[in-house]
Amino acid sequence: MPFNYNGLNAAANGIAAAGAYISAHTADPGSTGTSEVAGGSPAYARKQTTWGTAANGERVGSQVAIDVPAGTSVTYWGIWSAATSGTFLGGFPLGATETFGAQGVLNHTPTIDANAS
Image 1 (cartoon, helix red, strand yellow):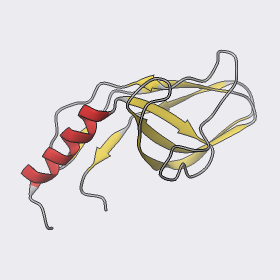
Image 2 (cartoon, helix red, strand yellow; image 1 turned 60 degrees about the vertical axis):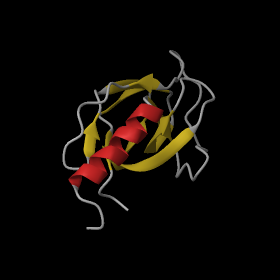
Image 3 (cartoon, rainbow, N blue to C red; image 1 turned 180 degrees about the vertical axis):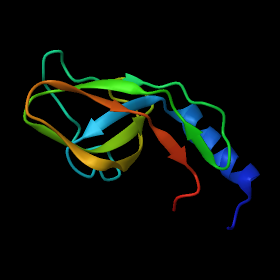
Image 4 (cartoon, rainbow, N blue to C red; image 1 turned 90 degrees about the vertical axis):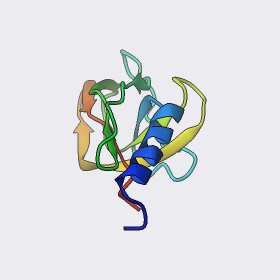
């Protein structure tokens, strides 16, 4: 491990300070945040999380409930600096694809893992 937990916690803290808005994506968002979900009623929107304290290189956020339109399969989640527009900080695969046959809610607890590379 090139960094100890002090260094990894500092990295996780930096990411948490830069972004607290969680997005849902229908495919790998790449480096720019593409394939973000859109539409629905209620309409899709990024949700703000509250990050917990860093420990062992991780920071866990509060669960977010993201509205997802019918006919959508969500495969990734992302971190942004703002509710709209903003800076995309990274995207991560969900543990399993979630498919919505009808309008629904993606309940997700985001985690920043500075141990992952």
